[in-house]
Image (cartoon, rainbow, N blue to C red; front, side):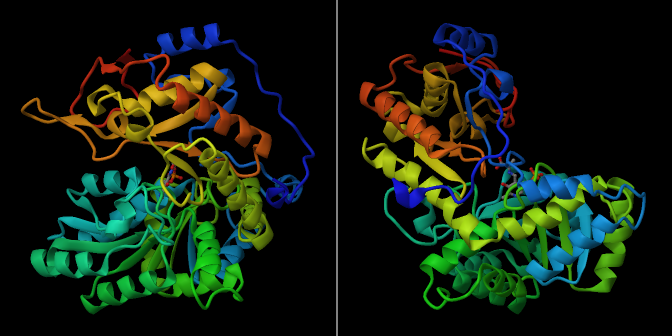
Length: 459
Ligand code: F0G
């Protein structure tokens, strides 16, 4: 509908390959029904992720051409640094090639300072946070408010970290067992759900009361700021930048995968307020990512980021971007498709057990849905359920997650609302017909740990 009309027009286009259902069936058989192994050329609409998949603007492409490729002190770094200082309010900025590199840098600096630490506390940690913790012998603990686990009822801030659970965990396990408190804005793992300003502030107060560092994982922080402006009393008249500056004022450190809200294909940063921390980060990052004025990025990448961060925090852009995801949600409502409500910032997350109730969780309903979407229209999505998170323990017992979600991640400025229509109508038909092609899948290999990138399945 017209209220969701895109706020841009298209200047450069990329043709997509057309394939037949017979061809796609062969592709699926060839990859053991694992969509992570399908070549991107064989996809029509790719909703696997919203990371690094944005379309850059004319201004970003123009900035790219002005990239300064000097080894140190390149001009683009200073533009990049200034944009981050301006939008996030931190004085010291360290560039990295992507988000996880910034998080690993932080982990290498902070974990040794907390030798007793066994846990890092979060609203809901993304895989890369879990991985960074495991390397240091630490476990990431999710402390979402109960509303965050409820896929049916609407709640404006399902990414909120429960202040009760946070206090209780610290009391029960002792401050020394905790590395720090981390807030993921928006919360990707439960549906791209936002965290309220009140909750960001309250959790910071608790962390600081116990002397714990408070860290922002801000991959999708502009989308979070947009939701605060739209939903939280007192923020309607504030700009996205003002909301961001307040949000980050509560944190000690922040790191970002700029591949999401920064509207670029590669990039990250770590930032802090103290020179002493910056000095340590400077030396450490030099060994892993390169000199602190490029950090694994070409000068032209830094130039595109400096522009992309401003475009990504522009209200009109965000309204169109999140509007597109909401449009997809509204179209799905016409067919009664069960998804996490309300839709989040970066996509629609389908509840696969409700979508295919006849397929038992042990037989991967989410994977069946992902395979059906590919078979029917060449649409690729990612399963965030039994395939991604189940594992076999030392005793050979298989553990399954509590919910099976299928994420339809929407890339920024890439697809049109006609693509959303096709996704919605395809899902509508599949929902009506009830797993037309697959009655369940079996996993043909179990390695003990999460192996969703590599496993094979048989229908
Ligand atoms: N934090 C969050 C919340 C993320 O969603 C991601 C990546 C990262 C950190 C790591 O950033 O990929 O630049 O190293 N999420 C992608 C996704 C991969 O598909 O959701 P990275």
